[in-house]
Length: 226
Image (cartoon, rainbow, N blue to C red; front, side):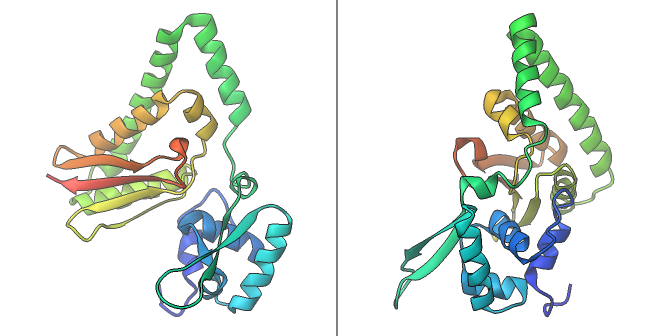
């Protein structure tokens, strides 16, 4: 992609499940993908001015979707940063959240915790098979990480990846479309990590460094070659 195009365009392509349609939604999307930003930074990402971005942020703040605070980073006057509120986070879908949590409760109450574990194990095995097939002809660890990020984005996780500067990679999931289910039953998160470790291969160590259900902005995984 040409460096002259707004950075936001590459972000939009990486998340197929949520497509921003106007400037306000693109701001929400960028904050979701990248975390706290100044109006000037958002303006550059959107290909517009910092003042235009600030005007959108003020409107979003009035709707309770973003909030600001001042912070010093280096010398000079403090800068005003913006981030999503809980209301802003809720604009990104948690797929069938209420129904999923209800069904998990029914399975656990009716058939017991062992039955619920078997359901999650079956889902884990199905996911593992799908990912193995998709990564089967990937020749390098970097290619496997990239394909895994694409798969997760297709499923709504708004995933991205990058080299970590130390010979490994970082895999990010900026959204969790099953967050309510994962919060109710963290075996989903255990299964997810197990699948990643399996499909990325025995020559890679995979460690979760940030976790949405523990209060982090996103889930992050460090992938280190062994």
